Image (cartoon, rainbow, N blue to C red; front, side, top):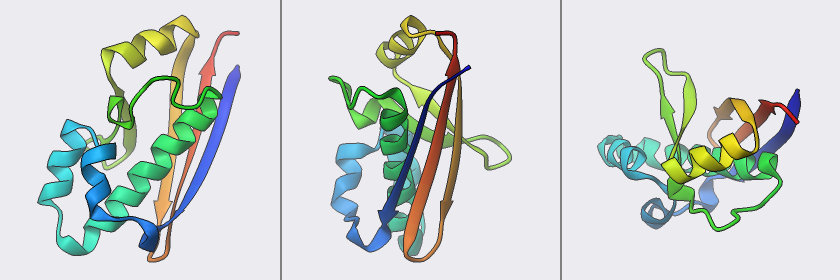
Amino acid sequence: MILGIGVDIVENERMDEKLAERILGEEELGMFRRLHPGRKIEYLASRFAAKEAFFKALGTGLNGFSFKEVQVLNDSHGKPFFSFSERMREFLEDRKIWAIHLSMSHERKYSIALVILEGKE
């Protein structure tokens, strides 16, 4: 059963590289630092959009959590997925959320993300 849907769009040029330290988790930050300078804003904007969409899907706002507790990583095929802090994993388990779907897209001007939460009510 779908428990939540969230979507967010970001205007890339409104992002500032200084935000990276505030919104990226440890693994994301490592990847961000290794990126070509021309890709950094796109990377940051897409991660920000994904995290905003995730919290919108939860319907709780940040609820005491930090953006750093929700990381967007990529599998070996490049597919994005969420990686959570232990505290966030427990929060999701308590709410019986067992599947999280993430789709992201970006182009020169905008980055967008869609999140669908599945579970038992």
